[in-house]
Length: 159
Image 1 (cartoon, rainbow, N blue to C red):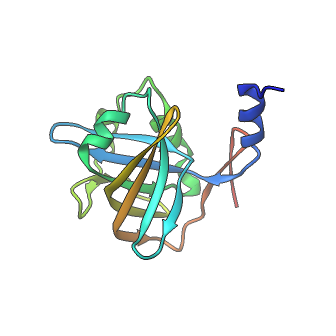
Image 2: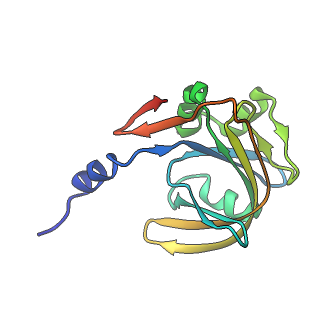
């Protein structure tokens, strides 16, 4: 019995998750992308990971930059999630339009998020059609007054 891509994706869509936007900056351009495959990895040292699809335009620049910020989106940021997920929007221009501040690592971060984690690239691991990206967290900030944006069965929710 073989597993179809549709059955696999449908089964995975039943796992609810928070929504993140990963922002990065190389020497000339900034970028970002929506990622739901984010999780903590280790407390000591402080490590996180996410999975990065190999065939997207952000793959190589993000890894080459060596640093990134995980922006954990709040309930009010569904539009931002969709913008950073779109292949039709230039993310450098979007970040410029949003007038993002720079974090301690020199990478733009999104205002109004639930929290952010500023990271250095610790390791990259082959994961089939994705790269598993491990980041070492250098700085963290959060806003306890905000509520999370959640993703479940290909739709957004909040609590």
